[in-house]
Image 1: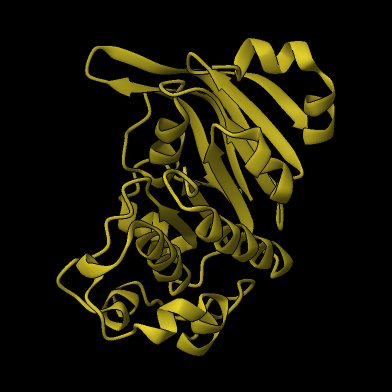
Image 2: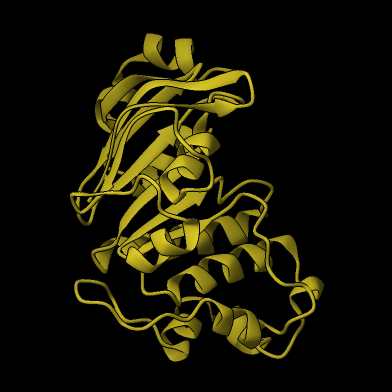
Length: 233
């Protein structure tokens, strides 16, 4: 579904990713794990075309993405929820959702407002509220819901649990589980193995811009030395 091969990327003179590889299969949830500054967000930005890669290849359903603007990548069926959420503060919940609307696409679940409000009932109860008046957790749910309105085949989630209250974490984790059952492919960036193990089958660990581990979460959980080396704070 989504493949990155030997990708190198960075900002200015600083190289962040080095020969980075990642593969995401249809209907799979993969957790991209690593400490702060390891390069997780950079991986997502390269995949979305927000950051030009210096080497390597990125392909979606076998189609190379080199040279495509982010809006063109989104129109192919890749949805992106940035860590900053970036909801439109002056627009209502409904208006925010409408900004993400795209036509239905073959091979992807079709999301309507009714389905969105079934997934996130709290958004349905505040559909006329401005995005800027929502709590951090509500904004996170709105950011995910707005992305789903584009009927994506792949969803890239950058630190979706960061700074959220436990009840909101539960709601977001449950929603990601629904996306998985719908057949969406999800790449989830996080630092916390505890959250990832609930919804992902496979993990990729990134450290200093390189993929250090790619395999099952079960094997990762069984290897204390690996966790200590790459994930311990």
